[in-house]
Length: 167
View (tube, rainbow, N blue to C red):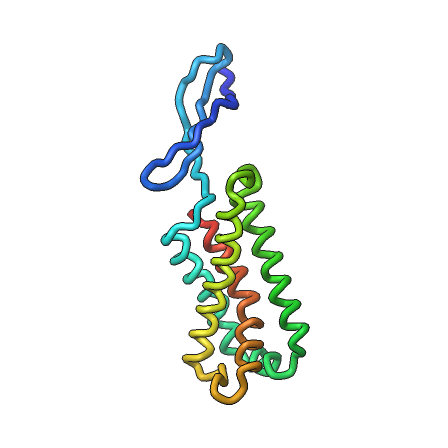
């Protein structure tokens, strides 16, 4: 029996999450069964928690290194901003190819929300961590504090994006 999928796929909300319902048909076109594929185009509270955990995974070891602290002090602001732009590009590409490649049309706002959410949550996690370990000199040197956050946010946002894709 030759099983194939038809283009008669539907999108249904099941248990609060969107799923693609794909009918499985035989050679005669008779529907034998249906399969569900999660359609991960919405950025839900569960995803936020996954991003927080993912951002913590790499921000912890990177934030505790003296090299990061020195880079935050010595690296020019233009380079740090370039690192942030690269981070956003990498997150955008990863999110597009893992979540939206076949569902981008009609979900552009959700795509932007997911990319911005991953990056902003990563920044907050990193800022909190560096502040707790007393490596963000907020009262004396705002620029160094910001540069350290942006530097550590590069790997933190990458691990946040990867953990967001785990379902």
